[in-house]
Length: 314
Length: 203
Image (cartoon, rainbow over all chains, first blue to last red; front, side, top):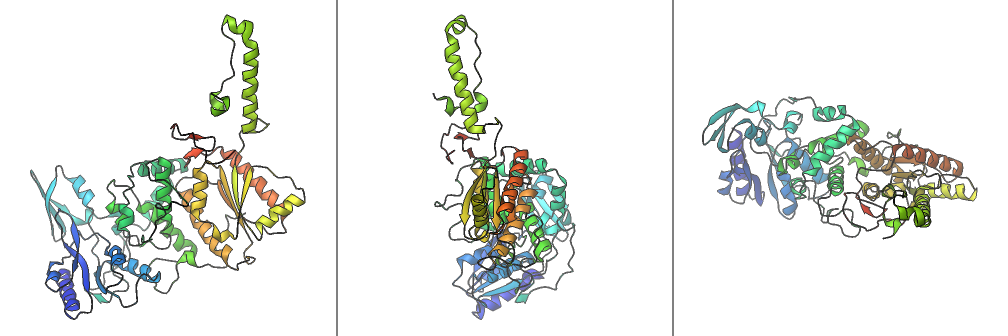
């Protein structure tokens, strides 16, 4: 069982002192959530779990542990983030030990909450079902009907460069056609698309949860905090909100691993993956680059081709 | 209150209504109407229609020199562009473009050396990738196609530069004044209907 293998691997690494700490998931205090933990001894490693609520991208914690040797529990998308980080030389080679878990796709807690009436007080995973209990109800929901959008389109569920793969590689296929939400969005007229973007970003409260959840957002001074030049202000004017989301997404061009952590972290449930998804699609179409798959491929915006697409240039 | 602090659309020409207006008002009214027309001309050009304001980022070695050549050759091109000289088209940060649009500028032109001719060898190639991905992203969001434009103009292409500027100005004129992204237009009024009077650009 994956959970058992993860615990064994973590305990082994900690006992041998191959790593200073292992970052993984433990039982969360809220239903439908798992919480990240930082295990420094084999005893603490007993708290590690694995289930369909392990939705966070733990690579985001690497920025805090750049001086330590870290064992990291990663799903397919998380492993891609780590490869992208190592391409940007965020840590020394050999500093990170990846405990790769072939992912069964994560469950969307918001979809589940919307499917029941009343607050969910307890939840557990039972084979192919998620059993949720509230004050006045107990419902068994089919797991595969409540997956995250980004998980449904995922074709890299097996971590690409794991040092320790704790399960057999899974057959790669997407439940949903790749880039489905982007194709749907592109069917709308430009005015409709703008209104959608405006409406989504109008809910933004500039909490920067998306920025904190994203492993690729690690700048010492983020562009929003820059005062000279002051690109945008801190307030909630619709122009500033749009500016923030355009540039935050754009800064992920060629770096985003489509883990969906940004959208999952947003307290206002703003749709964000359709932004970075489009940039990933363009980068793949124009420059043949996919984040975190080939550790030797240079980032697309740091390099160039002599015959790049340029029909738009007069 | 100066008549110039109110936007053109809110400055109606006065009509004579009361008896005193009829007897003595013609002088004041005439003066008021003249002021309105002068203000309109200053703002909108002598044709009386809105003129777009376009920011052009020109690379120092090719496009800026090409624009200079257009000037010394006395080639006429629309006066709607304001030029910012950058060392290379690869210097362009998408933040520049968005900041310009946010300030109320109606269109942005980024121009650099032809592929293979970059003074810094590969700056324009890298700039090409940034421009391509950013432009496609803006259009995907529903932002009007044609407000942000790119060109390759060499130092010897004075005539071509004026052609490019002409084309870009016509295209942006058709799109009309910018409404998306704008925070404060440079007429000094908050686009949100706020009472801010700060100016981002001098007219």
